[in-house]
Amino acid sequence: MSAAPVEIVEREFGELALNMGPQHPSTHGVLRLVLHLSGETVIKAIPVIGYLHRGVEKLSEHLAYDQLAPVYERDDYLAPTANSNAFVLAVEQLGSIAVPRRAQWLRAFVAEWQRVSSHLVWLGTLGLDLGGALGGGTTLYMYCFRERERILDFLEEFTGTRFHTNTNLVGGARYDLDAAMAARSDALAASIKTALPELWAMSGGNPIFQERTRGVGVISADLALGVGVTGPTLRASGVSYDVRKAASYDAYAELPFQVVTRTAGDAEARFQVRFDELAESLKLVRTIVAGLPTGPIFARKPLKNPKATKLPKGEAYAAVESPRGELGFHIVSDGSAKPYRLKINAPSFKNLQIVPHLLPGGLVADVVAILGSLDPVMGDVDR
Amino acid sequence: MPAPEVVLALSTRFGATPCPLGVEIPAGELLTAMRALRDAHGYRYYVLGTATERETTYEVGHVVRNLETNDTLFVKVGVPKDAPTLDSIAFVYAGAEWQEREIFDLFGVTFTAHPDLRRILMPDDYPGHPLRKSFAMDTPWGYRPATAPAPEGEA
Image 1 (cartoon, rainbow over the protein chains, first blue to last red):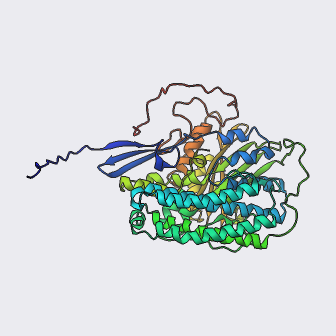
Image 2: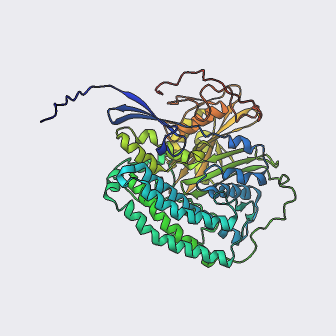
């Protein structure tokens, strides 16, 4: 007995416009992509953003300098300390406020731990995005989040909060590291380092993963510079620019580390840059604990009224290397206790801008791999 | 700090004047000056576009960087408040496209010859430009059904 022959009808539908998002698991938040498709091929992609716009820049003009740092920690919510770090650097530059050396090291310490935790979220969710190819995808996700959870536990014990550590103050740091916490940090760094080969075997070492990412979403160095992509996305295209080296801040001038670069410019290269940065950051936190200078962590007089701090008239721009790239603050001061104008240079906004250049010509399945490799955080894009 | 020789070159060729973090350039010279910065002076990396409200102008700023000399330069242009229009530089630096859309959205500065000048953060039918000083913090924001149709190309 044979089955009746199935007649396959192929029809040309022409161009199909498809909404991906704003509620879609692989858009990492509330990003909407309007994809114009011809069959499975993307011919045009229009990103629509703004769903998470909270008007932080307007709000900044109505709060005093010492009240503002915690507000920005809500922008890029996977690496909150980078936001407030850039802000306090700009305020310190504007007001010529000195920061004790120990505080600078402590800022870098929290920032590097959050870089590890942020990259682990990115790696885990990239596993989810690539889905079935990686044994259901949730395996890698669970392994990454297990390690990340231990970092969050450590940060909670160190600063009192899991995410929004709020450790950066204008003129210093809020929390000091004691010997017990230092030992815990070392042990944690050592144990996460031993987990890295396991994570690599599930992602970069997996032939299916390689096939999904290699040669996908290639950004040339020229395009990367013109569009202004930043961070690992820029470094994967062969441009060795890292704010920690190029415009050193906090303790980074004294700390030894490698700027990880790749030249391929594809999704795999961006994956490799971030993965190698995990190891670099784990090395950095141990260097910081070993060499932490002694001294005070806050140099200003105790604040009686946080609304009273006035900055001189002028302009300042300061940036840090957040896990997503250059995160800068441009502050215009009119001499009062509030910023006259404050602009956030958000790395995810700039990295997302490459999407319309990148997606056309690729397949729908590549869209999620490319988006995942760009690592946008919508809180950072929309501010 | 911006490189002195670049500031000098810009001031002799385009009448630029030094200002905090960079130079101020006459609006008519912006496009040629940005082209010269990219091609002749090596400022190939686009960092940021921003705007600040001044007394009679909106001061639009483009920030570009020379990665060889690691020099970051603010190029500022005053746009009169009563006729806020400026040349777009999106064809010189692709990265300016979204930044100019954001300035258009939040400050109401229009950019001529911009490839796709639409609101980017606020809803398409939103009245007003939130980052203008005349826009009050407590402007009511109630539910309104969408009135404008989706822009061309969006489903």
